[in-house]
Image (cartoon, rainbow, N blue to C red; front, side):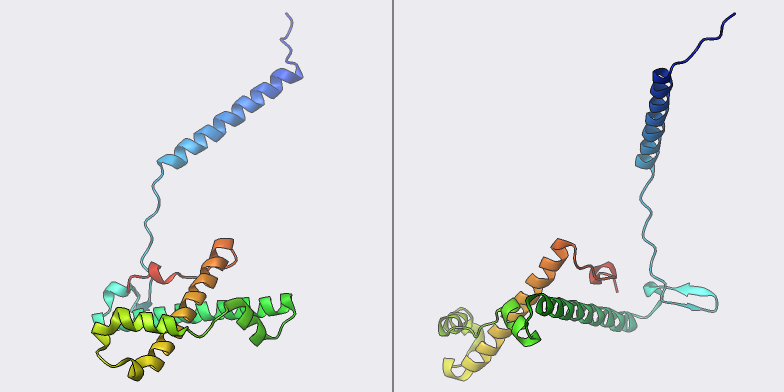
Length: 172
C-alpha cells in the first residue's frame, strides 16, 4: 500500500481554490448585509436618558440649527485661511498678495452694474444714481461668495478638504 503523494503544484492549486472560496463567501455575506441606519446624534443625557434633536422644543432646535450653520461657516473660513497661508508660502508671497492672486476679486464694471439694474429695475424701484454704489457692493459680495465656493469646491475635489460634520447631515 503506497500513499498518494501530492506535489507542490497540486497543493498550490488547492490553496488558491480554498482562498477564492473564502473571498467569494465573504463578498456574498457582505452584499446581503444591510447598511446600518445612522443613529440620531445625542445632544445631552438627562437623568440617564439620551436626548436627541427630537426631544427639544422647536425654537431651541432652530437655534441649534443656526449654531450648526454658523460653525460650518467658520470652519469653511478656517479652511480658506489655511489654503491662503499655504498658497502664500508655496509662492513666496505676502498673504495679501496671495489673496489677490488666488481669488482675483475685481470691482464690477459699469456694464455689470447697469445689467444688474436693468434685470432688477422692477424690484429696485429707485433711480440708477441712487442705487449704483449699493449694486456695486452687492456684486462684489456675490463675486467674493463665488470665489469662496470655487476654492472650497476645488479643495474638496482634490481630496484636500473635508469638513466634519457636513452641515446637511444634521436635520435640526
